[in-house]
Image 1 (cartoon, rainbow, N blue to C red):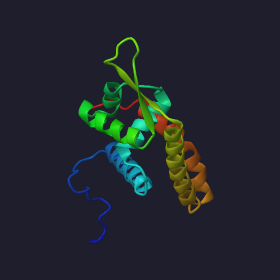
Image 2 (cartoon, rainbow, N blue to C red):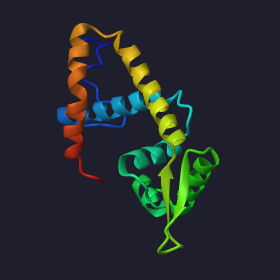
Image 3 (cartoon, helix red, strand yellow):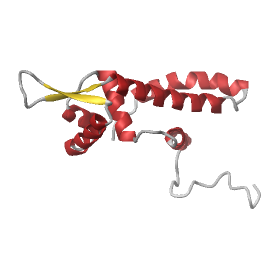
Image 4 (cartoon, one colour):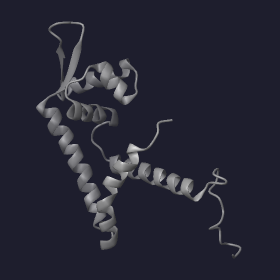
Length: 157
């Protein structure tokens, strides 16, 4: 190896990583950078988009349930829900049997806003994919299923 060949050097702060751990770290970093890049031109704050996404997937939820899904404090989610209500994206419905309980539901405007945000993101990814080779695009077709399967086996810390 030449003096300037640093292919065998360890990444800074990561001495002794096995090839499997190095690949896993590179994948984690690349996915994180990709997500941040795609979301960089979002028109909606991430916490609000995440709350709307939970409501699309799960239907009406309490503020406590939304907070748990996002791993934030109740007060933080209550503020997010308030901002979404102010924009007409969700409505808060009082439980008729227990008036202390409320559930948060998407409005048609909220559904449309989230769909538009998701379409904008998907369009950005599709546009970027046009710069890949045919072979790379063929591999890319398999990535979503592989990531879903990989995610099924990731243990929380």
